[in-house]
Length: 87
Image 1: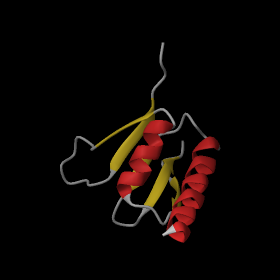
Image 2: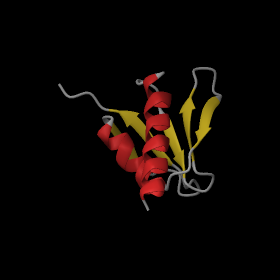
Image 3: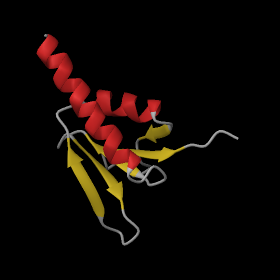
Image 4: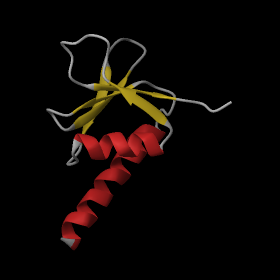
């Protein structure tokens, strides 16, 4: 169990590093493919696959100051995350 905990912590660190590269970007959590993707200005996306459950990614994104929710389009199943600034 300690090994599993360490692996999760390493994956969360990878998530943190990925988000720190562009903290103001929009992100999508794709639970089916266990990845998080950053939306790029040219309409493409940059993704990183993580060995984390969607709930773990969602929780960590909240800790990093993001608001995540399902998109308005009911055919899409990913979570959309945007950074929220506290005024």
